[in-house]
Image 1 (cartoon, rainbow, N blue to C red):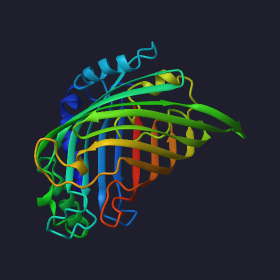
Image 2: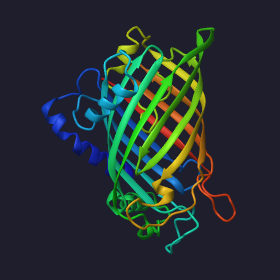
Image 3: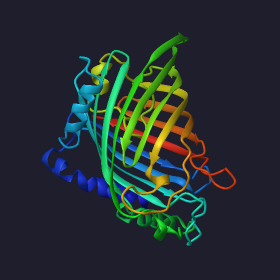
Image 4: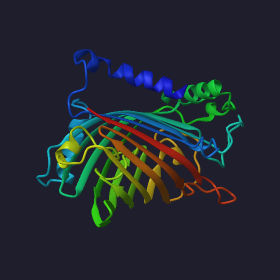
Length: 334
């Protein structure tokens, strides 16, 4: 249900573009990200994320993102590529069956946002800036989405959404830089290291991050799997710009990665900025361990990732927040 609701909303938001143009412009890119902990047999903490959009020639939040990108990565690389995304994240305590407030557990929260992205590459480096504007609180439709989906599949109904963070406008400004380095090749396969680093500021999160992935496969393109976090996706015409002679047919690789974040603020744990709200004691260091598979056949790409996230907050037993969830990315180039 939650997928249907959001996809309909997103489709409606793109109707003006669709009516003006019967098909996406050549070089555009459709991206769909879904993250959920269902396969890990849990329903807690960061329990669902969805993000939809991609590279297309819109003029909205991309304009300030472009100006910031030029300051952070001033080199004369490829042209600046633009994208637009709509997304929603849902967060709950460990038990969704408790209707009373749970002051020692993760607060109920939802985040609904629109993101404008600017991106460019030079050599083996990719820089991306994303600016997200949205809402946390009941207006982000967390209760409706989770309750509707659970009703559809016959799962336990969430009982505590009336305890969620209150309504508040929120924003993120994120920069992410990636580079790729060949480590060797044998039998038509290659091994690459793709380190990354970046920073985010805003009322939603303020953090610095660093990490990377190691991938092994054949006909590998891009800078690793596209991901749901700000700056994680490649945009309109970017692949054609930086890899004009890339092989057609089947591309595959397996990968393992680490992402470490030093977090100064997280609205989903610290509570809203301008209003009193539930909160919990946040851990400053959080990391993700990832393992996955990516496939591409001509213009269609699919990535599957298992994510193991470290504890994000403290409880009396010092075991709050560790979880496992899965991430799926579908990409289609036009």
